[in-house]
Length: 318
Ligand code: UT7
Image (cartoon, rainbow, N blue to C red):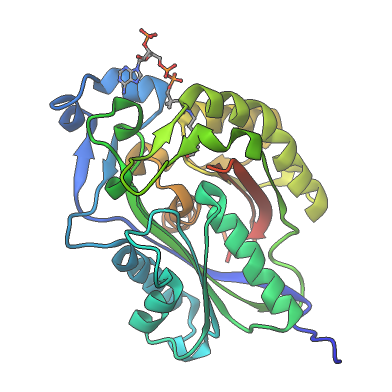
């Protein structure tokens, strides 16, 4: 049997992000649940979030973000031979999202699969894409993180309603002579699997906020450091740190413990809320749009969430 060999490296060619139009402010939520703007801003860091209407599905969000990334990459749909969608909030599990997103974008007969690693999903999917390119099983990959969390939230539960939101982000990944996507560091803590959970088809998302908060602020900075080490990058050299947008206090704590002193820290949560697998590519695309990072800069991505799962890698900004 032959061994497949692909490109020496893989790199992100472009990012794209999309948020639905409907803005929901903290004051809007305070009209129906016992919460207030000051609590949400102080404890989580969110000012407003976007929520999709009933006419806009997680597939629609993914198509928008994927289309933007594809347009920015300079490739066409015909160049893509693998589509990977990271999501944990599909309205229905069958069929997968990837084949539908590919079809809507005009990508003909690609490999198509979904990844469910919750809020770490984009980093898992990006790693799978890079491995496929290096292993010779794909040439150009569209990776999308998309979530319509609003359809899994009890809008009377203030513990979750103030946090989660809808959105999508995407990356086009292609071959490279030198590595533009560093080795992934990934893992899980299944002993805490019920800290973020949808128990059955009739249930909404439940989160033990403090359990996850404690874990995120104590267990993840070593993962972030290891991802830098495996990529041969000193955290002090990073131009950007783009962690999952779960809570501003978590973001600040990990950034401080990591020692990414020169890095721009993604704080997309303020206007986007927590969009799970979409939050990292969405934040990354906004950072690039605002000119906060330049092509060739190094950014550390770090996803973490239900499972509990986590994954991080250093990427070169396209
Ligand atoms: O995306 C996947 C990964 N997820 C995460 O990383 C989430 C990690 N966890 C968190 O970010 C935080 O735990 C939350 C934002 C979810 C909650 O913040 P917290 O500071 O841990 O709040 P808490 O649950 O400990 O509640 C503190 C107080 C309580 O009142 P008392 O008992 O001190 O009087 C709550 O009843 O705040 C109260 N509270 C609220 N007040 C106003 C809880 N939720 C709210 C609310 N509005 N929405």
